[in-house]
Image (cartoon, rainbow, N blue to C red; front, side, top):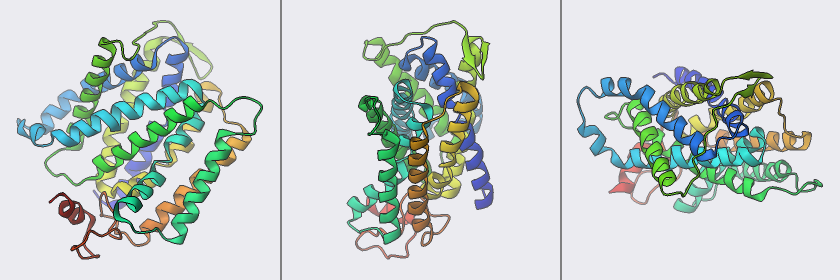
Length: 332
């Protein structure tokens, strides 16, 4: 896939992903538990994609065994943990604020690479990180008369960690595992993990088949569920993985920031919900900070690099070596 095409796919994916908070919140407000909404979302999308995934495999079932680690990581963290934590955050915070917290993930990626390879980031990255954390303070609105829901904030940050795993796993070059197969297997693995947790009573699994409210209209519950399964999950995950493989984790996470804007607009359209002005200002600071961090990396990293930037070298590996080769060297 060409870079420009990959950017277009990434933008579409971001816009579609942004609908998930609105669809999910409509179900949660109607009495659904977070665990049930996430499980139905993953299982439904996994089943929808199952036949296309089987066709893409062409009978090569060994591919699944050969790639069990990325599939497990993607399903357990990039899908189940990320979705569950985000929906739990949406229960306590507005959709926009919850997503602003989740999208601290690109900053986390930079910090992880900094710690792992012990090379301090450049000045622009440091400024961007400071802006992002300053924006976080405004998003939390610590000076407000209402008490900050720190549990909701914690869930938002856990969702960010899950998103970090999502970017790293989906961006790794893997010609043997088609994107739709990774998406389908990851969704089904995530659904299975959630179902087991629900079976043992670890996560509540409550459903409520009553009408919900979307865009000011009362609609059947299955409208929200189908939107969550087909639009914001099945289509969004496949396009997201395609974009990550075409652009790499850094560029893909950069473009996917548009999801924050899209989610706020979708929440306003579907739920009549907007963050407070000070929180919107904080969101803009987070957005600006992450843009600076991403831009600083992209100045020296080729568009086709994946997973790790070449300016975080591994001893014995030339600095100009591509990121794919760096990952392989690290795994040896």
